[in-house]
Image (cartoon, rainbow, N blue to C red; front, side, top):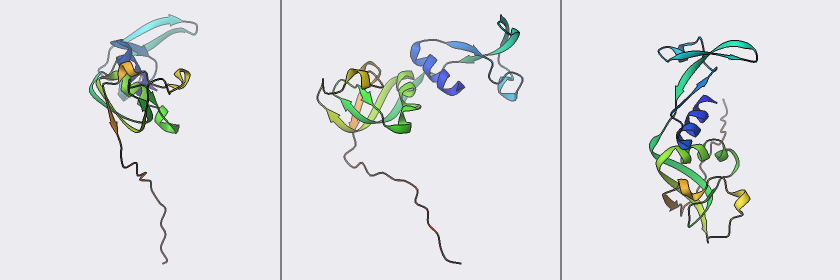
Length: 135
């Protein structure tokens, strides 16, 4: 959660944010903390800095020529926020479609965050295969 939020914050231009995650653990060592009052009383929060990458590499299923991206399955977990936090984002895609083909409600990352598109001409899916041997 914190990693995803650090990426999202970087993409949104937020330099840092406070979170309860990690308070009192090794994760919070050396980081500034602040006590805020809230619904459950005073609580301590740790300051987490956002992540802004020089280069972001993402893999998408479809893109149009404007850079709008659609991801499939678990690629939707981190790829949209990784694309957002990069100063330059390169998207490797399986298919490039003409502009206006993608349903605007189905776009997971707008083209404003994507600077380069690379078409993967060999979309071989390398997955682990369970192998067994006799004793």
